[in-house]
Length: 207
Image (cartoon, rainbow, N blue to C red):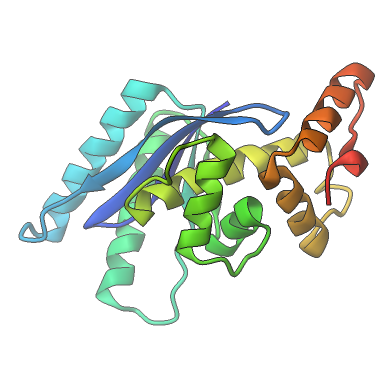
């Protein structure tokens, strides 16, 4: 699976392209930010952003687009711009006939760090560790986009094993994410055991 993660924003819109499989191994393909000039009016900035996302889709041919779900308690201009950018990303993905999935910030944080309250630095550090990078992607918008893509790969792997359907939720899901994010030898042994037995070996994952 190839996932294009989008951390929406008008001034800086992070993107990250990640390849992953059912064993939850992930490899970074591309990462960066799309930028639009603040001196342009919003409609033209959205047009420019649409072109940037379109070009990235044509370059990497992802199987799915994962976008951060926008939440806000106040109707501020910044939040409105973020929501508009998210809408553009959704439109471009749908126009290409791709599945478009939304993930909440806490969901992404829990997936890559084991805690839904992790800060941006913790997310960036774990992303670099998961992907075996020498340093975390910068700026933070880029790291967040990669984390979105990793989150989607891992949640899809969980669903493929039927774990979420069987009621694996809340604290147990976070515990499972912590074990996977650590990428230890025990996790690799669990993956190998699954391939041999052809049945899920989730109970063997590190805690």
